[in-house]
Length: 108
Length: 116
Image 1 (cartoon, rainbow over the protein chains, first blue to last red):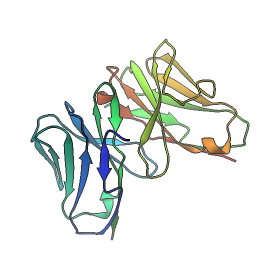
Image 2: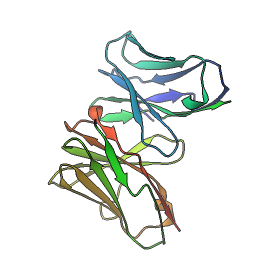
Image 3: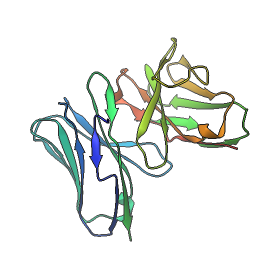
Image 4: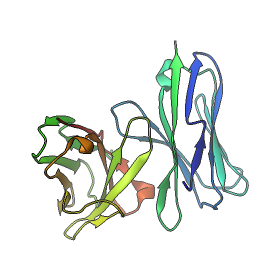
């Protein structure tokens, strides 16, 4: 059982479509991070959300931290091929956990 | 700032040989470095945590005699895969943290290992 479950695991969409990736847990996190990893590269931090209910925007990406700080979502508007990659949520409790990952492919 | 490099970026070796992977923090001192293994389109699996000047802490199930980690300075950690087998083929990623926490870690670009 993974502490941070992401859904969907795989997602393939057409350029221009919108999508949402979810990161869920039964545990309360003080903060959650989202990373994007392109094929053959290391993960790059996109954002850290700290406050329950917080919404952060990064261009076409919108991140939300659940009110109870147990879940988070990433919404991408008008996806582009450059958004293709593995998206990982992550957070620390007694130790640091990575989510199960969502592999996104945006088809031109 | 906060750049981490890995060398080599990819390596092919014969079964039974050893392979060394270097992880360097280029513009900051890394109290702690982390080594991960990753299979295609899957999440990161922490293998071990290394602190400068001390023995690495290995995660459960990771053989310390097979994956030798040395953290000789505040900017360099090495992972040596000893007596490599085809099942060791994977993507190995390091990260470096200036404050020993994974919340503040900067990832290297990864090393692709293929064992024939």
